[in-house]
Image 1 (cartoon, rainbow, N blue to C red):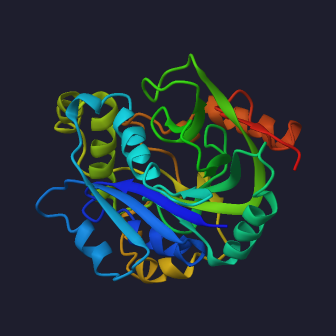
Image 2: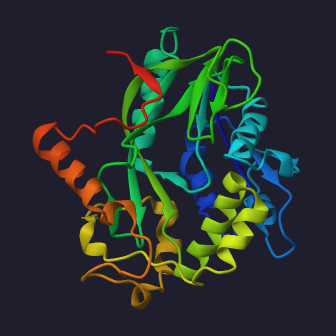
Image 3: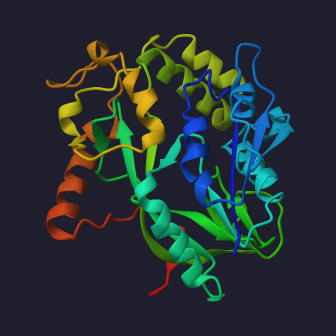
Length: 314
């Protein structure tokens, strides 16, 4: 059995993505790791940082991002597929550049892949998620934050990155990542492992830069530039007391980055949200009410959220 890791990135270091940590977190159980690196700005050294690892398992694909695909996140799925198509493993382990796996889960993941290797009806593995917010000690566990997602898929040319690369689908024919006709959800089995998502953990100024970059591939660069040229320089995370507190341990590969955490004084721990900005979803009555209902009356299961998979009892 062989496992290939894969991902994509552009301006990763500049935008404070833990992309190096992400790769290193699963490299021990991967036979290779393929990453598509988009042509970055002159002040970004993502490719150089990855090359400096001197890991023979890592394969870099240099890419150019087509501005025509920077709408509705299509470029993210396109770049994901570029890396996926170069993978040689039986199972393909996808991590986005802000996702990291704790080393305690690696034996569990590898064993699960071995158990299901010959169970051809299983097309992918479903992981639990922990979405950190603001710092390394608080996380989102309310309505609207996906609690599960597919991160391991079979090496099947019919399986493609879907929509803005959050998930995967089986395509009978392929036209674009957002097509609905000719596609179906993957049949997946759970793995008792968690993805640590650090996409919302950055110094407030860099968080605003990351949001601008992300919105530019969903709205288009012109619209994003117009919006953020008039937006505050610093991202307001709001009161962290509205979130869950994390008392566990982070992956070892994250320890050096966590030791550099130096924006505590720019965070709001308690109090009310700033009334002069648009509230975050978890601050609104609607989302807080739905979270309460889900936790107290629905066994923690989210109501009416994105579920792009068919869960098998395996």
